[in-house]
Length: 448
Image (tube, rainbow, N blue to C red; front, side):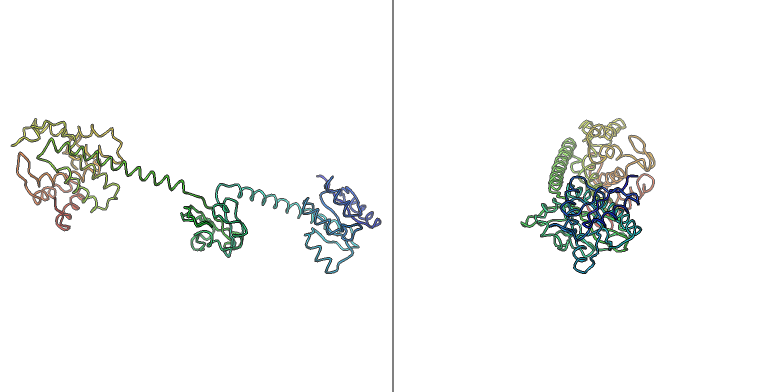
């Protein structure tokens, strides 16, 4: 272990020699014995020691206190005062320089060694703490977010340059002010967990010094020491103008895409209705009833929107069916009915390559499936059938039976409701049937 290097500054030669011998006997490395403050400053500049023993009263223009102040502030070297003077004025002046020890003459070797060891240890700890503070300060000043710290009373104690720039305020205008006057932030203890681990992140608006409004995202966290209550808070905030702009553009783009998609769906629906005038409006009415059933079942709006679009083109596959079959009066033959039954598969084939936000192609594919497996085209059962398809299925049955067809007259809504009631839990989803019945019999739903 390297010896502690000590510089002795003492203008009484006999005392200086005595101190020198004491230090050498205790194993310290005495790098110099000087008698003036000027010599001490020069020695520290050229060959800095680990510690300085400084007499307060020295010959020359610079006394021990002035020299000690420069040595500590500019070089970070700890100083221990050696003096026979202990009056209040001298002590008060010496305290300002933050000495690491104060020994009154005469003193013994044990007292000297203890003071030196304690001063050296304290200096090492102070240096480590100072380096950590400088490192942390550098990090906080260079970070890409605004950082403001407040004490337990909510008064600002620190801010980095970006915080100054974003607020439009200089340090002297912010330090000591309530944080709540600078940013729209809450520091209620109830907002954090008892151990202070919770971080609260929220968006807000910062009004800078010039009156400009700036959208920000801020994260506030309590500073926890050994006390149960928060010693303060740290607030990190960032300008989210670009993000807000991007979100707006994405939202507008999404709305445009939704409108384009809705237009495409409507065009496809109109194409089918033009080929099959007898079912004009069928898909639209099925879509309306399907959405009403879904809403009564408590499905989320986004899922209902998918059901609406699927309902509007659930018969798109009929574009493959010859028009003479679609408009044929009288009973259909088995072969003709088999051709019509292909529309579910054809509709799926048409739609499967389109990337809808919802499973439109599968809903169209499954809207003629039945819970007991008696449907087509795949004979699916129960939960294997999408809920959306089960809804469109019931709506399709009710609307078709209620409307006129070339091969039969309209049978009416009540007959349609009786049909789905008979098949409840067997062919049709019971929850869907119950919602449908409630719509007509309790809510007064009617087709246009």
